Image (cartoon, rainbow, N blue to C red; front, side, top):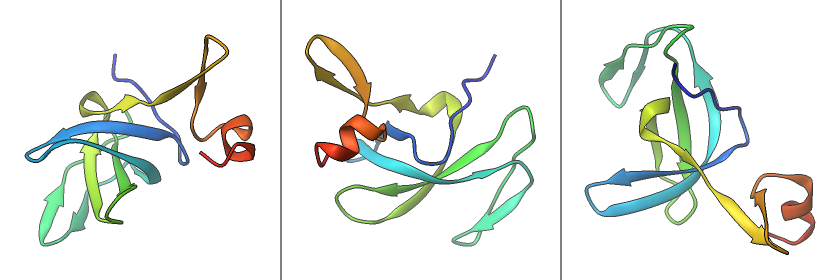
Length: 90
């Protein structure tokens, strides 16, 4: 089963330059062209458009390449895009 993510989720992926973190800005379920390349997507295997935290670069990846990023607050993991993390400015 492929992990499903939602718009606003904070994720991490491995790029040529190392690990990158960013926020999902769009979920694609049909083929889409980005930067001259057609990304093949389906309802059961979507691709996610992600904006990098550091560079604002937009990338597209399948869910299997992504991992949710969690914050450690009081011993519990809190997703960065959660209301608690937003109040803390993270």
